Amino acid sequence: MPREKKKSRKDSQPPGPVMVDVAGPVLTKEEKKRLRHPLVGGVILFARNFQDRQTLCELTARIRKVRDEPLLIAVDHEGGRVQRFRSDGFTPLPAMRGLGRVWDTDPLLAMRLATETGYVLAAELRACGVDLSFTPVLDLDYGVSKVIGDRAFHRDARVVAMLARALIQGLGLAGMAACGKHFPGHGFVSADSHHEIPVDPRSLERVLREDSAPYGWLGDLVLPSVMPAHVIYPKVDDKPAGFSRRWIQDILRARMGYDGVVFSDDLTMEGASVAGDILARANAALGAGCDMVLVCNRPDMADDLLDRLRHESDPQSVERIRRLMPRTPSVAWDDLQADRRYQHARSLQSQIVSG
Image (cartoon, rainbow, N blue to C red; front, side, top):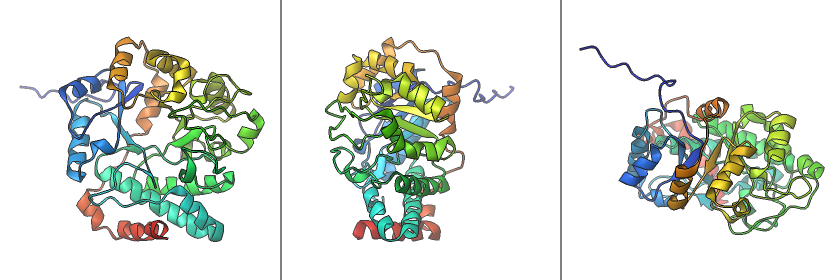
């Protein structure tokens, strides 16, 4: 009997434009069905999905088996207070402001530490089957934002760009891509877009000169994906940046020449509510130029969206999303622990946490 031909990537189901989550450390039948939906292209994990490393590895392995072409598995794992996995061997990572403080006394050391932090972050995640972390935060530290706070590297856009580039280099050493957030800048407003609708009154010129500068300096070759802010800049557009063709198409894509993936921020956040119900929010984000939209913590909304969304696959978006998948094999956890390069990096970045 002739062997069945293995499906090529062209024949497999391409990644759809919706990223969803799962409720716990084990996939349910309903979740497997949802992940097989042709509009789903990724899964975002949270702390609730982690009991220990073994269950995390089992979960990511099961997610990969759901589709012929694996879904993109992502997580918000920045360091500091935004680190989803914190036990069973995962290294406590510093908040990015800690790297900025090192920069103020020793810039070269800060860049070295940023690279090592990025490497440890990515190597540990990849050893457990995670493809992408939504990091680094490129917002400037104005000292007023409730939600950004010490997640930002620094107030100076030049320092942010340099430290982000060093961190991204570390991610790349472990085979992981990066995602800069929150374009064009969330740091100037005090309101938290998870619970409020922030409004930034500044002019386009001022935002581009300061907050958006790191995106232009890094570009899509260094920063292959970005996430816009659920912030309204009324002097530019009356829509939040993630729903704005002006911000995504005219400014980010055309003016800044950006050709990486654009993820929406979570569409269940209060900052997204101005667009209407979940279908209206997704249509607004995709219509503005987002390649993939996130629907988190509300499986009812995810199912509603998947039932009603009518979206034709965009070959450019599909190819951009595929570029985020790791191109090199990950290192097994036990092998990672025995690696001197990893252990040295781990000891260096731990100085920021303890210091």
